[in-house]
Image (cartoon, rainbow, N blue to C red; front, top):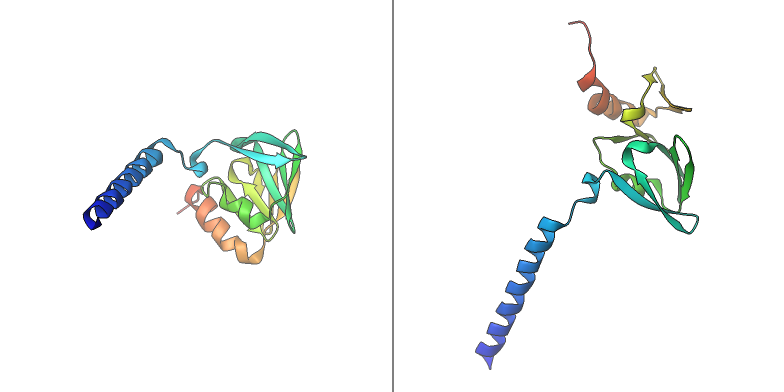
Length: 141
């Protein structure tokens, strides 16, 4: 009976581990997709990541802004940010995440985006400049 139980457990373990290997190769990491689905106004909306200009947090809700529309999503900003790719989106203040592809200009304390001017928070400024601006900056040496 003991050997039967061990063999049954081994088969179950092998079956689960082979399913996980197959599943991991076919499933995509959500951060590597070029779109996301959000739930807004009792419906699911498909948004291309490249269309998202910025995300504004308001307690337990976020406003997602695109060039044509804005959507209200029942989620906090931290959770929403964790589902976005870090190479395209950066948090610039306590209540704002921006898409770096839409930056028009950066002044000392503000970022200009299409239709928006966002303040850069002091605690987010260095991370934003180091990770998203300085690597693409052309300057005199």
